[in-house]
Image (cartoon, rainbow, N blue to C red; front, side, top):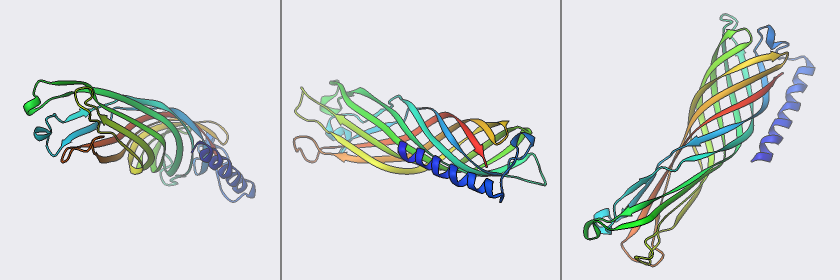
Length: 258
């Protein structure tokens, strides 16, 4: 995905500059209050989150002999990618700028955690040390978002944004009752998910055709779920895992405006 993002930036930059050289459209000077037109550039930053992993022993916690649990691993990582967008400064309200932006980012957001399992029913009071564990990763993600902004100054755009988010997640979990029992309930789930995102930012025009921005986004890619059988078959006992996929990010970017 990192190579795809870089290729997308290079190709779109060529196309965008072609439009400018043909004289068909595009701002000539951002610093003199002209924001209408296409733009493209790279971005990078950091991302973090504490999404829940829900663990449910089946057919019921009471019959299984073990309580349900919720784990919240601390995820963190970096990101790198690029964005392409279009702005339209409204002629009747020169302070108002509407636009749309899409971006693609490589990500190494990841984290894991473990927790004791507490016995239930006949096993009440029994503690299985670090029996529950979960691991989550986000490999890449992208967004497609409208933006609405106002000019605090001719050269300073403040905006809010929200829309579609999508990404690739890799997740795994285990319920490990060794050495007190021979059973493990291993599970893994890899999926491309869609969801939503919302946030805002500020963009500063610092030279003709150039601007720099800082942006915050919260995104929610929804949840994934799977049911694991024990390493040694033991019907009707299973464990259901549900991973939630939420995170926040702050990133910095530079845009070239055609």
